[in-house]
Amino acid sequence: MMAVNRSKHLEVREKLAQAQKLDPRVEALVNEVIGRVADKWTMIILDVLAEHGELRFTQLSKLATGISQKMLTQTLRAMERDGLVIRTIHPVMPPKVEYRLTDLGLGLGAAFCGVWIWAEKNLDTINQARKDYDTRAARQ
Image (cartoon, rainbow, N blue to C red; front, side, top):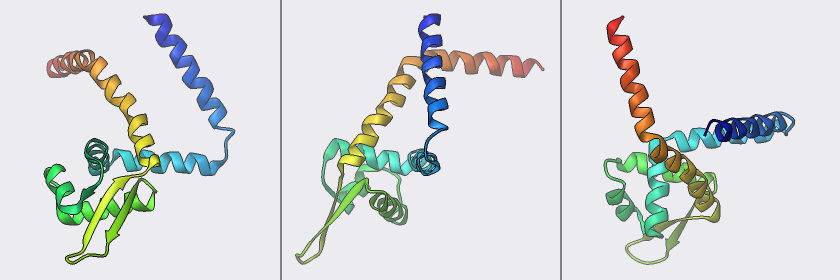
């Protein structure tokens, strides 16, 4: 197990060293994407659209429990600007607007699945580490 972790660590370090040689615009984009996915609502909307496909604003609002209309609008606009969602306006009365993930959005969701898998795999270990830390901190 330790050899696998060390091997993976070395692989990541090598990729990071190579990344330092990359165009600074790539680094800026990576930082922006991390900021985008770190946003609570972006990931929830990404997940809801990945699971349900094309949805109207009201459907999306109901499925993304707890989000305000203002925050949903802001998040969808930011996702649309980043090319993660497509907003389709149908010329009917009343107006019908639907949102769906682009290939870029689906790809981001797939990339983020690795974090979910890691969290699931390491849940007990992390909880134990937190418990151990809290016990030590309480003694001090």
